[in-house]
Image (cartoon, rainbow, N blue to C red; front, side):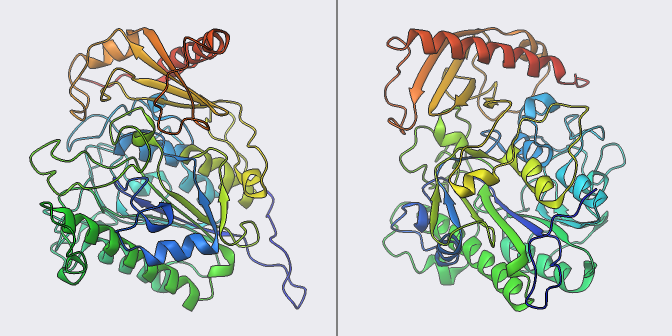
Length: 461
């Protein structure tokens, strides 16, 4: 196993291996940050991070809903291969199986110290020996929740640290998560090792709670819950600022890759009773969370990679969370597993203005999506979205009895075709005027759809 050397210091000595920090938000919309065009919500720390690194305009989550998205990020595999079809309720059989290999486990095997801080949501039986926990998937240290901060972001009671319940905590979830991440950097991690830290904020997922000093900054917000949402994003931004200051103060900035993104698009206002504070924006994109259209899967992305990103640059090459595993492993000199399909690719060429070489096109499948399209694939500038002959399930209801059989047997029927470079908002279906392209992409999509479904495990009902 080789060690990737960044370069040399002024004294001629080799520098350490690269550290990695992934910051993942929950339900943050493509249009929620100042650096992505929002003129109302104040996000100075993320705007600064973007000015120091690269803004990823075509950044994707691996699914339009949380649990599949997180599992895809950790494994570099489209989540339907893993059998994680929807969000995982407490006690559910779906989970990230022990057979899966994660980014954390690969980096750990290469000598990295690893930590998961925040929302986990990759199993139903959290903190139970019946299913793998963060510690079983490569994280030496974990301070996590099964799903959302409970009862709200303020004063949560459901964190678990390395298998031990923490009990009631004071403060807001993003501050608690940021402070724990800094505590780990200072007193827990092994300083002679490189590190991988996966920081997962609960914000701005419902049930939202925000500090009054920030809600008061939005007097123009007149709709019910609007100021709470704006302040929630600003509070998360402030927590990112704490993390970046911690890296600066500990002289870790120059050797740490920071990758910031969201697990899916913004929640739809009033989709359920508690979602009255969900005022997130997909920007110019069509759809929101739970859609296969861009608003459900295209998310804000920022990467600051010292020596590889030009300050204030913009990368328009499509990059997905499935790409993080192969990219970070390539940087760390870690060999990829060869006994399974990886859907991601090394995205470092994109930071040089080059194309990413993909063996598999970007692919999404959400059986319970809003609207007719349930499956999508992007190749170059073109995206194909497929309807299926299965039923229209209520979006976000999770996997229920009898649905696995339908997911594994339903056929793709009608197709929509969009040129995303010319038509970001997916307003014009080009299927009828591009018959040859449609036929080729539909054939490729059907083959990938069948391949992925065959690989997925079957959960006990």
